[in-house]
Image 1 (cartoon, rainbow, N blue to C red):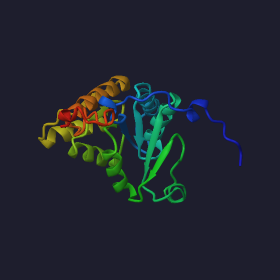
Image 2: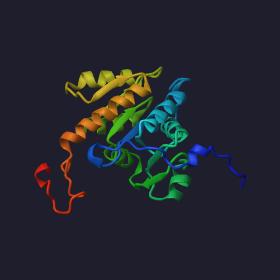
Image 3: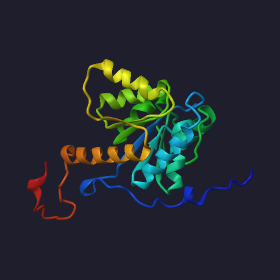
Image 4: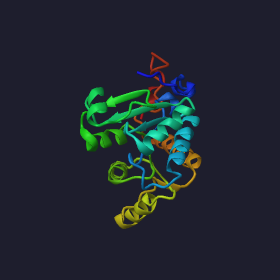
Length: 227
């Protein structure tokens, strides 16, 4: 087998993480998009890479469906900046992932083999992410958007030369269900910044053990701040 030439950043230790308030975890931003991007336009790959780079630069962990196309290029962008990448596979193990689903192992530090097929994978991907970015996509992307919408996850819809953003705008308007956790932007940097800010504020309000100082004080002197 020929030796692969890897970019050094793609195998480097992640540089920084954007931790949630009081150290409870790291912001995980899921990227949803078409595995086959032929109809997405010429700038789709570069937009995807720019999105991944911004997630890593701003300290987030990128999560994807462990697939090709738009999500893979986003993961590539994250690894360009020494970010950390998690993939959620529809397969039950690595062999099935590669041989049956014909999916890559590139640009991921960790692959979770769900064994639940595409639809089950979509659910676990969204629910394992603090926020979702929707890029150029097809029916699977719309499914992931629907799960994120129902779960009221913060959603960033990346505008581009593709039609996905316009389709989703119409769906949202037609749903007659107000949702203040959805933002539209054509700038990946601004989109990621807004999502991280939204996730951080949300966790401050809803995380059940936020401000619990048990981990720092065995005497539990600050138990009154446990929500």
